[in-house]
Length: 100
Image (tube, rainbow, N blue to C red):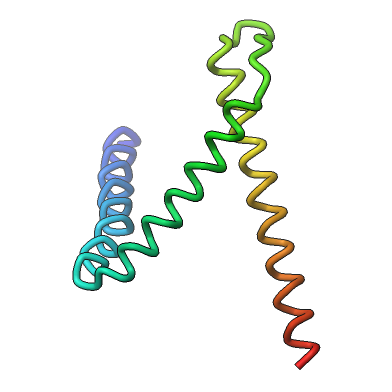
């Protein structure tokens, strides 16, 4: 019974992921300006990840390979950069609202 439930949940997760990715794309193709903005956002995230990947150390620890270590380091660095950016954006917005 558990196997059937897991199988159904995997199918539902797949449908949700397709809907979450597909619906904005369908809407974006109707409006070229939003498609351009989405491309800029995805490109910026890709640049942040690539910078994080190339600056990450590849010192293998234990049974982890060099690539695995670089990917983990890049993921952590990307998270830190985006978290700091989000916090700075919130602080900037609040200061701007308070100044008006």
